[in-house]
Image (cartoon, rainbow, N blue to C red; front, side):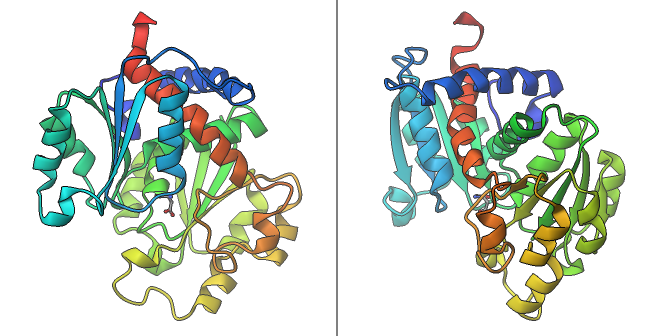
Length: 309
Ligand code: ASP
């Protein structure tokens, strides 16, 4: 694996398989009473989050701690960034303390790539604007594989606010690398511009018609309507969005009880996903959270311990 994880482009199918195999071992740690491995003893991991987060930030922190690394959390709001310090000065200041890895979330697309050029530490992209969220895609692949076995040839349907979703962008790359068939479904206003060329090149399908695609799904991933990234009106009303693109009670019946449902969280219950679907036996939402710790342990381990351990 390279020194950084900035994008799913940084890992090929073999490296993804290796990471997910390590994650399987790391997942066992979660089931132990004493959740501690010595692998990253003496290493320092900084989580630098300029955007809000519940799952990603805490799971990277837990992952570091369970591997015995020293972890420090910094948020944009409580740091000198709120006094006007530039991103470059902030990350160079942190790096000067001698850190081994910097896990960064920032609202600007491309920021993680930029930060990697400013510091010697390994950089992990924990979400950069609407661009990528590679650790999320890896944990989604892990979760689906645990439930369905190899994803080769399986049809995964990604639905929602694709324009604003870094989870969508990373997942398309990861799932297609693993040989899955992917269909991306969104209303025309939330389908990313340029998707036609990208889908042709990357080999995935697009559709505006959820009801036509759902019966053919082996797994479905609902993505959040990201109001905080919307400047104008992308759909007439919440009700109309749900009618066209929500995973409603009726659509749950069409899916059948064996088709796994994923959502990266946070969920807008009643908008893109009905409570019946979010809490259904086939929902993997909490499995994704649990996998998040194991997969992030695997990422930190591969980046920092590598082949020496
Ligand atoms: N938590 C994910 C992210 O940070 C998904 C979302 O916010 O909708 O991208």
